[in-house]
Length: 246
Image (cartoon, rainbow, N blue to C red; front, side, top):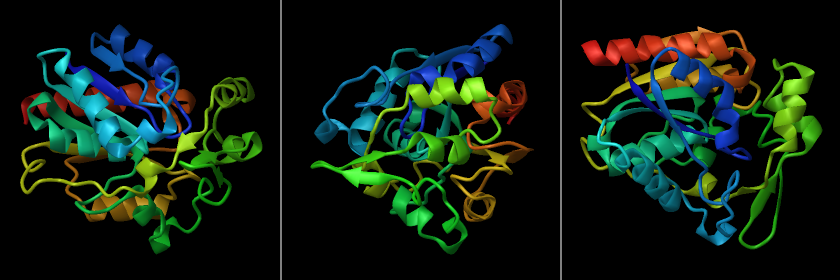
């Protein structure tokens, strides 16, 4: 069985992976979840919540076990997974983008949202940004629609109650991928067709512009780990099986 390291998205924390982590462990996989700096139960000041710090935290988690991991990121977690894998590639068996941003070298999350295919992004449309360093806040009603549209009311309320403001620096910082760093790493994508945070057209464009070994489509929202937990666990198991035989 595989080792998974799961990277959460903006406004979130390790907590959001709980149901999926349980499913994967029941199937025999090992799972690591963690809070990015300034997120979840980590209270690093916003000034320290940079993409560089995010990637460093991911590499710390990866290095805590000698077994290379399948790194799965959701949403902004795709940016973090990419940057972390570029920094410590020997620790990564494969990358999975769970309706996540999939950048090329020199692209930031904000660059991807500004592509024509990203014009219906309901996160960028609804966040408010304040402070120095700037923090983005997502209103509860907007979160319900943009992030948890296919979740049950109780699950959505549980998640929204745990949201925290998101430091903006990781949104605007381009990834830096050394030449060839990811060339030997399989990349997989989980498309979510009802996603209102990363529109379907943008998901498809990112897949078209990057080499993905396998793609699974789920008819759900931006948070399939809560709305389609079993289906996502099956997709990750499929990717793990493929990565061990490729």
